[in-house]
Length: 340
Image (cartoon, rainbow, N blue to C red; front, side):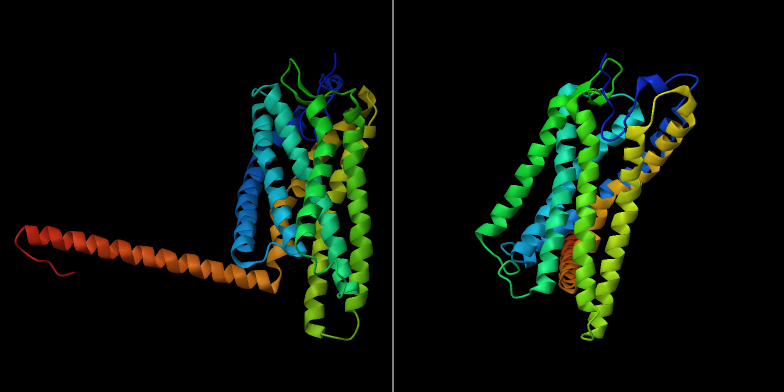
């Protein structure tokens, strides 16, 4: 019988669920720590990315190519985040009880967010590289139709890549939601993600090394130092988050089946649960590293906070005045005016 693997990355095989090769410890570990951690990730991602969208719409020209990419990255992260609550529920419950259509749809949406975010980071890194190396290039200041067509192309590619997850995802009799073990996606699903990581890594390394090389020229020391710190932090966070995760899913996909390798498989199960925490938290870290580190966006954020605080203060004062008026009217009707 074809056994679906639980979504999104728990490559599970029934042959391991026996007394000789018991993975219940890693399953319980995931059931305890994953829901807590990813609940926090969902909250931070929804807050951070929604704030990015509001600031872009309110203060920025979303027709510029840079802002168009940032806007779509925030939307992509929110789409990716939309799948996490279902994933948390699935691991807390132990089985999928929402039906096969929901299983297919959640996997489909999850991977659209996953791949679109990766493709957008690649394009944004290349665009940043061109802006430093050739600041007068037309690509840097592109506006209008291209700002619509470029994101649309990325979304179409992401949807095409994610379609197999919808087609081959099933829910079996044991309540496991995921793609069928011997389907084409069971192989390509793993190596597509690894290929995306390798491609992103190569683009990151090439572009940011070139940017750092340019910044090491003796001009603008203060700005140079700050920019180098941001780039270094961005690259460290990216590789610490995604490299261990991709190494583990590769090793897990190559792990042989048998009682003599149970300890290795169990260790990889624990490692997957831990590495996944860092990898999937990118959806709440992107707003910090790609948006709010910029001076312009920080100024917009402070301005937005001041406006919200001012409106809240006005609302509170209006509420106090209204309450005072009601108390005065009540006092007059009783024959005694009260001054507050």
